[in-house]
Image (cartoon, rainbow, N blue to C red):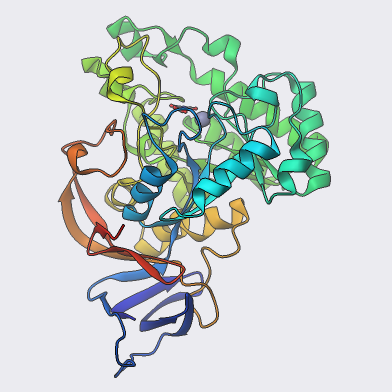
Amino acid sequence: MIHGGTLVDPTGTRPGDVLIQDGVIVSAGNRVESAPAGTVVLDAGGCVVAPGLVDLHTHLREPGREEAETVETGSRAAALGGYTAVVAMPNTEPAIDSAAVVRQVLELGRDALCDVAVAGSITVGREGTRLAPLAEMAALGVKLFTDDGSGVQDARLMRRALEYASSLGVTLAQHCEDSSLAAGGHMHEGEWSSRLGIPGQPAEAEELMVMRDLALCRLTGTPVHFLHLSTARSVAMVRGAKASGLPVTAEATPHHLCLTDACVAGYDTVFKVNPPLRSAEDAAAIRAGLADGTIDAIATDHAPHAKEAKEAPFDQAPPGMIGLETALGVALSELDLPIERVVALLSWKPAAIAGLAEHGRPITAGIPANLCVIDPEMEWTVDPARMASRSRNTPFAGRTLRGRVRHTVLAGEPVVVNGQAQR
Ligand code: DOR
Ligand code: ZN
């Protein structure tokens, strides 16, 4: 039983206890005076009880980069962050571009501390030249496809992929980056890149591909999901596209909504990420896009990298930062939105984009108990040494955040209790 909290779900907000049996919610919304003997009680006093969070964009690094993360360590980080499901990105080694690798990752996910869904790659080896066997991956339940890490550069191939996706009922997600324009850039191109002497990637490298894919979306009528939007004009284009009725969705990361290119001033590679941290105006536009619904979801782009890799000089270090354990705290601290809206951006909206029917559901009898309990007032300081991720590359080290996960329940099992992972 989850006792004493306030339920927040797509139907609204109300006080109530939740009784769970055999992985399924048996009652929700009433105060339970006496639970059956032997009931495990999780205290939710002062807390919000919500559907578990869903991450559209997690790099779990398995297979191939187990020194940075594994399905086990990444799923533990996810559970501690309140997630009951994550979508594993396909830029592994080998890439998730065939039924065999999809099966391998799904198998690894079976014992994980959250549900692990898989995104397949659009092209073979994410090389951008030949379409991957989308149908055989879709047959295993893959619903999202992306070459994340790169965008599909060839417009004709992207058009064909969209037509194919349409017939399969799956969604293509794009990492928007024109590689010719971004080439050689290691941060956002602007005043800071000039001052620091680091070659930059212009905002237009992202915007060109957003513009092109909006055109391809119009041409094919097939939905497109835009990954980690980072510029004000990207947000404006998606806003316009939605107003004209195009079937597009978009996500933004916690780091792009509150960090800027000024963070790079100390040449600390922890702030190197793709797309790069942009200007303060861009970050404000991301927050405005989240507030007005232009951006549908917050996704972490959790990108663990081993210490040795991040210790390289700025131009040689790999881009990426971890985010699963801090996303909720950053969103609650940095967005001027009620908690109901923040939870929507982190739970049921991404669940709908990922097509995860067992997550982000209204908290009612008969549904699988995938839940998180959030203490919205708890202040805590981010300490990389205490994170569950195998990597420590968080840009929020030392920051005090308000809002933290108290418990996470996966299919009825308390996987996090009082902020501690249970296995
Ligand atoms: O910063 C990034 N890191 N951006 C990406 O697109 C890929 C990711 C990674 O896999 O490390
Ligand atoms: Zn990406």
